[in-house]
Length: 75
Image 1 (tube, one colour):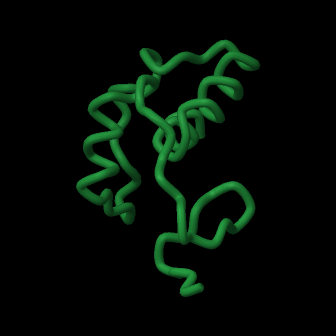
Image 2: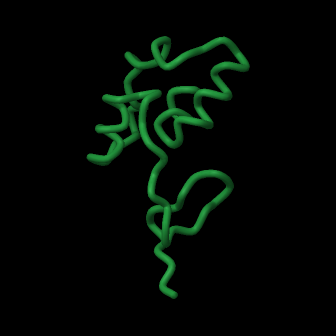
Image 3: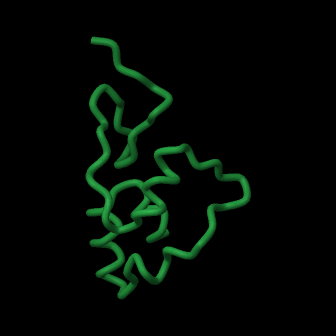
């Protein structure tokens, strides 16, 4: 889960990982789930796991803490 949190948002992944003693270096070599398809952006974030800038979520609807990239807000 720390791997997934880091992929979504560094701050979230780092805080959760710190709480349980797991850092980016511990999960960097893990592969995506068999049914998980990573976007080009995800691949770039994975290559820089733990050191990524915040995602640009402008115009996206937040579902819980993860941006729903399939739903675009038109204002």
